[in-house]
Amino acid sequence: MSLSVRADLRNIAIIAHVDHGKTTLVDGMLRQTGTFRANEAVVDRVLDSGDLEREKGITILAKQTTIDYEGVHLNIVDTPGHADFGGEVERSLLMVDAVLLLVDASEGPLPQTRYVLQKAMARQLPVIVALNKIDRSDARPAEVLDDVYELFMDLGATDGQIEFPVVYTNAKAGTATTDLATPGADLKPLLELLVAITPAPIYEEGHPLQLLVTNLSANDYVGRMAVGRIRNGKLRVGQRVTIVREEDENTDGSIELGRRKIVTGTVTALQTAHGIDRVDMIEAGPGDIVSVAGLPEVTIGDTLTDPADPRPLPRLDVDAPTLRMTFGVNSSPMAGRDGAFLTSRQIKARLEREVLGNVAIEVHPTESGETFEVRGRGELQLAILIEQMRREGFELTVSRPEVILHTVDGATQEPYERVTIDIPPDYIGVVQQALAARKGQLEQMSTDTDGRVRLEFIIPTRGLIGYRGQLLSDTRGTALMHQINEGYGPWAGEVTHRTSGVLVADRAGESRAYALSALVERSELFISPSTEVYEGMIIGENSRPGDMDVNPNKSKALSKMRTQATDGDYRIHTPPRVITLESAIEFIAADELVEVTPTAIRLRKRLLSQHERRRASGANFKAGLG
Ligand SMILES: Nc1nc2c(ncn2[C@@H]2O[C@H](COP(=O)(O)OP(=O)(O)OP(=O)(O)O)[C@@H](O)[C@H]2O)c(=O)[nH]1
Ligand SMILES: [Mg+2]
Image 1: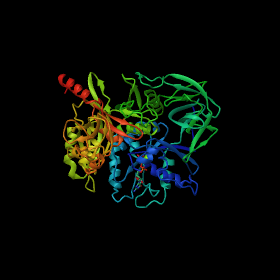
Image 2 (image 1 turned 90 degrees about the horizontal axis):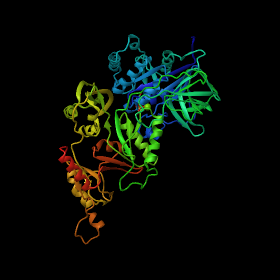
Image 3 (image 1 turned 120 degrees about the vertical axis):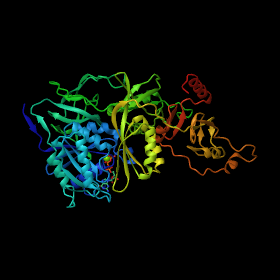
Image 4 (image 1 turned 45 degrees about the horizontal axis):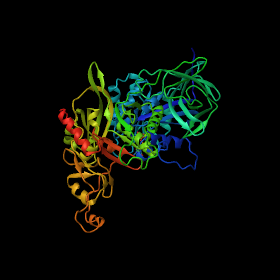
């Protein structure tokens, strides 16, 4: 066996906690290496190209870009920092030979910093540490660097791993320096480090083709493309390749495509990144990260191999989902008014497509053919999928997320999260109290130089569902909260989800200011006057426990004047609470659902008729469950 090196190539991933500046740093590298044409107008965070990415200001999908620096082709994979998209990071690490770990020089390492570093260390990848945002007035690089060393030790780093090189960056200005005393002028010091530290790809001379498919992309002209890094061998346009799919052990009725399949196809197009564009190539070699067209049946986890000597790579293994919720047909009386895709068949097909391109999502059938169980890693990940579907024209009914339980040696286990909460000291009491009620255990408490306090808890994932909204109102919007999964632990006992009840419309019609002005005294409303409602629709949060069936449509009785005019006398001074998709999913209880259409988000009871709900709660009461 003789090993060779691709000296002209480097593959690296940028990893960090959310918002620490990864995508901004990539902008700087693209600009300074002349990737854009001189007069090309380029938006900030150019790689965040998805609609939702731009709206939310976060990266959702990992993306690869390429720059040329002093004769070296540098493939850079920009990854998302939000914990819910950790699957993207895990996949990206399979394509690279080193990571650039970015840490905000004032915030320091946060939960996702720990998670991504742990994943990189498990793959034995060399780490370069960049302390970013050194321009911030509250930057404290020396302390943060100590925290980073501590994190490495905490994760059991070897001596080799702990001797990481450090570079200080201001991604916004596009400067880097290895010595804080000498301010940087450009990103050269960073680029030099990347080239010097990242090992060039190594491959076996003469070995048959091996490419593990880690991503899929679609191209209007050539169809589905498989994305991955060539481990060994070469790929050419026109070449015959065999797709080997290893068997999946847990095909427990999930809608995943059948595994263990061998198909052969011909490469019709081969592309690589150049800056932010894709360029065609005729041939690619070991170490290259490429998109391959011509294999319509390919999915993530497949290996592209040589038909004469197929040698599949180990299946890609990512952390399993911890949350599940149901996606079903919209069954409200207002269904079908503005969506284009309404049927369970359409929803099923769409979810199957999602599973193909997103290894961190699973779809399972339920007893009802109208409803599917979708599993993922976090509320945001699931909410993003729902948001994408409504933008595509789907109508859906979704449930509240629930945790996926495991049984280990006959005992029930549930997922836990490590959560850090950053608050002004005044709120320590209220936060501790709330999290104790949700079965949180305080692990650590530290004070920042600016007086803010950081609390770190280990808490059942269940306990955190719906907490974000409460935290923000408890702390007047001043809290920052971050969480990552900590694996499974013993069932922690009952956790109360929501203590308040809701106001439920007891009939269909149009809401009136007269009725709402009376209701607003004891509740926070979700609707304004002249909103069409249906029986069973939730129109507000009760300030006390227990649900109330109310008539939001009542106008002033016995008036000779026209309703409209009479109604005008009543003004509601508190505007209704704005219901976003994420807040709705967090808020609802187990007997409630969210109705999602391209133009509306409504909360509702599962059982719409008052009569049916009474009967169900009566039955629960008799059975001792009520
Ligand atoms: N002051 C300052 N702000 C920065 C710096 N780098 C990034 N930012 C800002 O930090 C915010 C987040 O930057 P992004 O580049 O989106 O961060 P990210 O790590 O890609 O975020 P995710 O991909 O969502 O995890 C933006 O508002 C940037 O302008 C820096 O060096 N200094
Ligand atoms: Mg980003």
